[in-house]
Image (cartoon, rainbow, N blue to C red):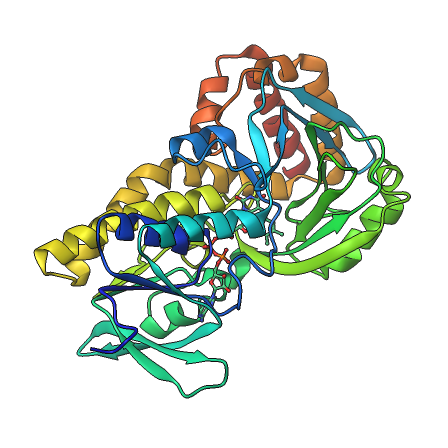
Length: 409
Ligand SMILES: Cc1cc2nc3c(=O)[nH]c(=O)nc-3n(C[C@H](O)[C@H](O)[C@H](O)COP(=O)(O)OP(=O)(O)OC[C@H]3O[C@@H](n4cnc5c(N)ncnc54)[C@H](O)[C@@H]3O)c2cc1C
């Protein structure tokens, strides 16, 4: 037997890959994870802003002290000319994690259950024979390529989606991508410790938004994503011109900076093949409104692991045996993803002036108090519907729609 052989091979040691590895190893399946970097979680490109409720549902909260950075019970939204709409929640609803340590924590959990990790091991291609994915080819630190057979390959390679392309399955469209910059800054001023700052508008972040997420030591995570253009130029603009952010960042220095894309088109529908499943970012399992993909990726990875165990037990790893993965993902996320996709498209079409008016209107109608007890921020379709019986939320939605229609008539 090949020394690397396992029943299941996982490509990528991100949150999706390690979560699938954990579930499989916990049930006694021989599983190997191949990660191209020499350390799990490095380099980190993510703000690590997560819902506490969802983490609890996944059994991941409370988190170890070194992983958890801060908890948040507020959010301040700013239009490009500085109009502020503040939401103050009745208790902490979100938190930030150190993504490097979070990824390592998930990988350690999987290894404790018996999953094997091969670091510095780049998967260069899938082995496809007789219309089945039958393993992977790996290169480790300039050594010769090695073939690793497996009954099933779980692809959690993230946004690159190179192996997914090799299967011939449809990929996310390039049009659905936004290009993000994530920085760590020091010396931020005039920010509340337990509130995230969100800067909306096309002038600063066309097609998405910018964020500033404070830590407790005066440093913060700062980032934005854009549909077109160089995100670094927009970050520079935020630093120097935004009426609020420029003051908060007036003496800040960038300590670390990273660039990465985010797929916002909603989960892909055909991500299984004979002997193959895709999870996480490569399958576009990301919230189209906020770009958050950790909770969706981990949740889908768990579903994938359950389906894989069933298929292995039945001795049938064909696509028809694995298709229940897709059905279960659809049942769990399709409704909310569709609503979020519509919301994203809707917000993308609002002009900066309309966004400014909307934030003013929301502040006047008392939308903040309607939002006070919100806990669910991942399943935003359900949250939106639950809010529609609150007059201020309903009025804001109607106002936004009228604003949009009058300007685009
Ligand atoms: C700027 C930015 C901010 C974000 N902020 C948030 C946030 O606040 N909250 C949130 O929920 N989400 C956020 N996201 C999204 C989040 O980072 C992703 O959704 C999440 O990391 C996806 O997990 P994954 O396991 O699918 O992929 P990844 O975390 O990308 O992991 C993929 C792994 O596969 C490895 N790999 C790739 N190709 C190969 C190969 N050929 N061989 C071996 N290994 C390979 C990579 O090295 C990597 O370790 C953000 C994204 C960006 C870009």
